[in-house]
Length: 132
Image (tube, rainbow, N blue to C red; front, side):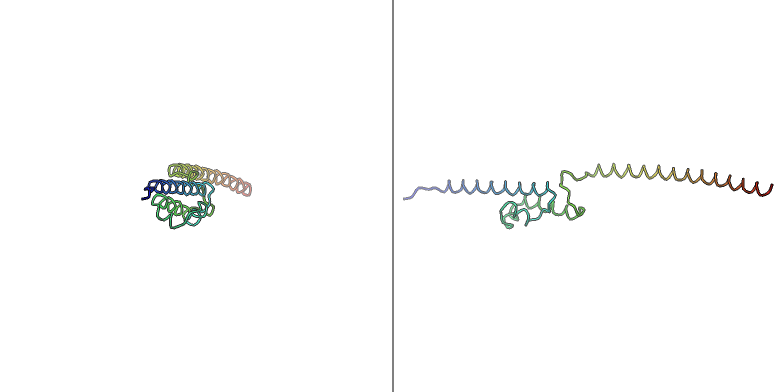
């Protein structure tokens, strides 16, 4: 009768699974940090795993889909997730731009009024010069 070595096989399979997961996660992070397109194909190629294996891993699949969808909405040059602007940062920039717009509008109004006064004085002086 043969000895039962299934525990060794199970342990080796578990170790291989964890190593494969680590390679896939590392490839996913590397692609994102480089600003490269994150798709199932690119992650599978970078990690040397099959696409079907990636689809079978719920957490890895969700992260690939999240990054893939984010890059579709992003500009032509993808920006790594950790370098993307937060909503609060974008709101601050919008508030600053709005404030600057208000300041420029007030300045334009003031300059137009000054210009109108100067042109009015020049016109009045020209009329007085003609009537004398």
